[in-house]
Image 1 (cartoon, rainbow, N blue to C red):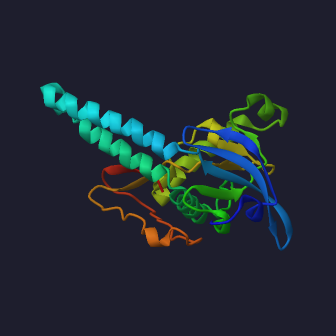
Image 2: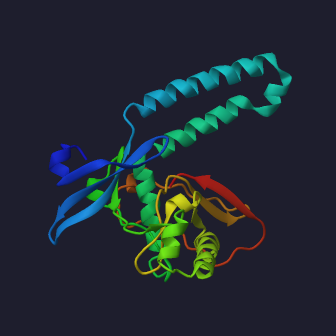
Image 3: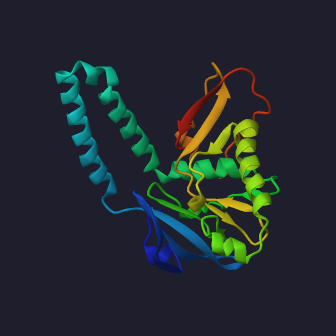
Length: 240
């Protein structure tokens, strides 16, 4: 998305949420049917450089420790730092998060009690993810949930069933599903946000194909549907 902010968005507000590597802004885009509110997730300025400095320091300490200590070599500290570096690099490419969001949207499009925001692909790039703005009640706001007189027991069952459905039916699930990443919309459905950390399940011994980077911009990714699992299940944490 190589264009000026004022050319891409009709309005662009201050941050409404922030985390370690990114922050979210409320904005508006112009569409044939009128203006539409969107949530724009952007990487923090200079975050890749700062993480690079920290990871270099971690790597130096890990290598030094393994040179000096047998116990440190047993812990494989260098391998731990390398795994962390790969994970951070993946999480900083917001196209991967958009792809994961689109895949889950396909998997759950017929689910009665769960949905995810729609990705605005024309406004999404490596360091910017634009999606549907969610007007809902945060699951972390108990007072607001009480004020809406929602059935908490029913909501709890829907949450557990949703997670199990995604894991066992689709083999693809939200791996950071804490209350801050969940909302209840006007229709009483759960809406998940923040798809930076995802998980996959597959039967033991089954290779899980990695997403082809050439398909990252495609708005309709093929779902990984699995109806049954036999034997031990192996978890593979992924970032889209």
